[in-house]
Image (cartoon, rainbow, N blue to C red; front, top):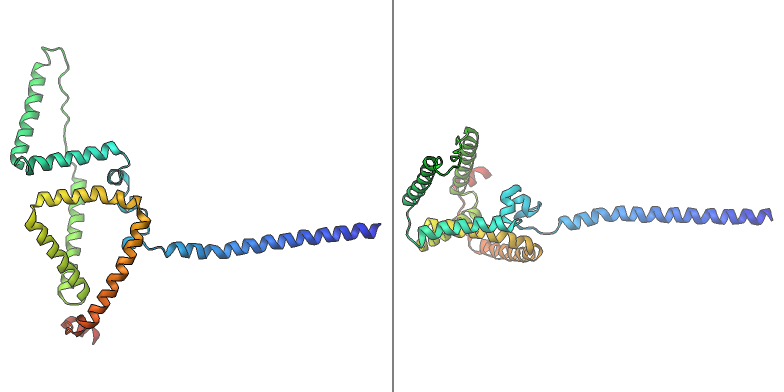
Length: 249
């Protein structure tokens, strides 16, 4: 009887040990699969090598919320205001100096009349705030603008030196597109078109992110293929720039 109970206990202990080993193996398999899953996710193509969400790429905060239509009333108000300003200058031939002058005339007249008529209508005079522009944001903007201009000069110098033919052709193509657009419309219309694109494309991309990235990956692969053919047949036969030859020496 005791031997029978001992065999039962041993068989039960063996089952428990087998189960523990099975759980350990399954957990180890899961741990082994983790790098595979993470590596698979990391291999997903994103436009411009993007690794952050669209909201973070746009800088986050309220500007990104406006561009991505997080608050539809504010986004629609900003778009409507810019559209109104563009319509005043383009469709109704309003001039900037005239617009600023008329705006100041109306504002000053309303405040002046309100201040003088407040004693007759038994209402408090308007509280005109003491507007003071701080130096910090202006200096930061000037510093950032100077940095970007200097970086642009370095890039232009690098392109003009003949080191990267692919970048040179890309910049020339972009400038040609800008010249064609500039001949079709003025700067204000170009600014408005850019604002419309900035106000619509990010939210559309965020909504159809996977489809757009898949299409962009195929388009980039086809572009690289055609560029390789063009490089082998044409670009490789062009003599290299003097700076590039010196660098190789």
